Length: 455
Picture 1: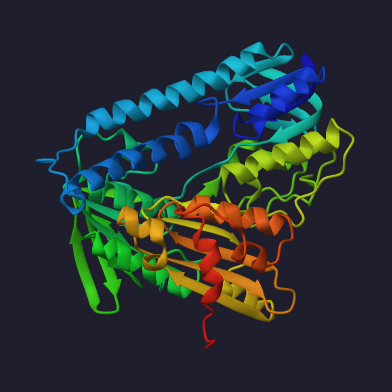
Picture 2: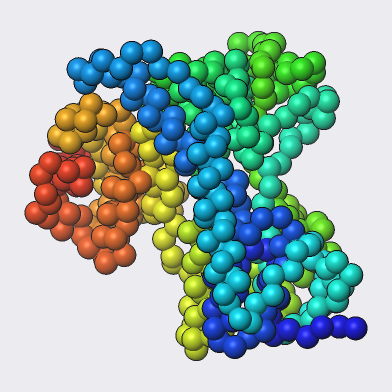
């Protein structure tokens, strides 16, 4: 027997959960199918636990720097089991909050299991057959295991399992120089591990401007992390042994633990999308238009599973778009939305809008304002002067096109720049703003006095 619902949501992520509650409030009978944890990657294996552990690592870092501030702290040691306990408690708090909100939604049934299409609008899960006119795919991503010879025989850690360690690794090898790899690399270095990052590309953080990526590398190396660029891992063997080809020849690396952070892959292969006629691209991501509609009428994809920037705030905005269009009678799209992000290394890298490289590829006539954090009074007072600010401005309109802030609380500062961009403010509005002294935000008064290539 087929059970009829108004809506079916596949995946309890940062789009699926609020959408279920909104559909319930609109009187829509909704089935929310989740095979693992309520809350999705962010709450359980991504943002919440990693940033909790990053905070512990920063306290360790500052404790070791006590002498710089005239503070005697004595010996500093890390109880990784206690760090893990704190992380688990916060995850459980966030997860239970999500579960309670769903339980309070009268028209929502949470179905535990893995859903699978058996027709254009029909799903099977745990022997049940469900049908709905609206179906929403929010199944997210998982770690991708690279095709390296012998890697299947080596004990691997991914972004989830690495946070379950209860002792500090002696030597952590990190495959991948993207956001995930770098956050964990610096975290475990601060906990006391020897860390080596192995990255195939010519620079870390492949989407960033070269000067930003180079400064990130310098900061990590200053922290004692070994960074290998243009490094192609050819073979894995033994407990944790890697054969890596570099510009300087072949290196044999032996570590105590191996973290694989070499990209993500969509959770779509088990969905049987072909049965519904839902199109994917060559990498398995669900194809959508600007309204988040798939190739099948009434079926939508939200969050990471559709490709593009894999950030929680993007997933949540996808929910807002679908809610506005289906429940509120509006017409919102993904077109033109800003996608800011922060890489939680220390100092943070906050980014929004176009990079310098992107702006030049688009043929924009630009000016680049750039200032080291050593010129920011608040950063000097905090003794947190690593990094720089970089803002891209349209030379004709004087509008801000994008920014990178690699500095203490860079994510917060770049959020102020984003608000200015959203409001269509010219750069001079920030340059002449009366901002409280001494704050990090005050740096926006001064950065526009430093134009690259201009006297």
